[in-house]
Image 1 (cartoon, rainbow, N blue to C red):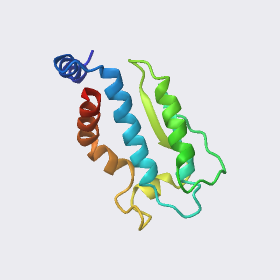
Image 2: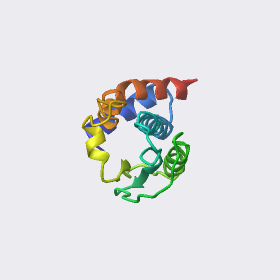
Image 3: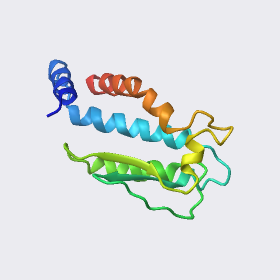
Image 4: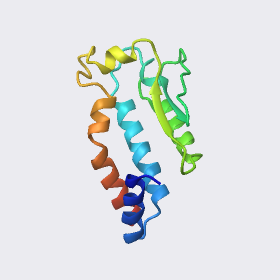
Length: 133
């Protein structure tokens, strides 16, 4: 187990929290932030966020979903099947995803992934608090 993994396990044990629940909630909230923070024109980009376990899911589709509910549903279903030790990937493989992340859209000039990663601690803290409740 990595040093970070050991630290998280100690925190979880101290607070009598199931760490797997905290991890799932943290990743789900971060995935939802990326989806909801995605710029919306047609809705295709927002509908192409994918979940992958241990590898990137590079699937793309032509579906249109301005709400992002389909993407969040896929992420939720993937996280439900997650097992400790697996790496979770949330990706968008549309050809223009990197441009959007780099600030190409005025709707998301700071990107989606970078801003979500920057808020990791807040997501983790909230998941810990919810797990304690």
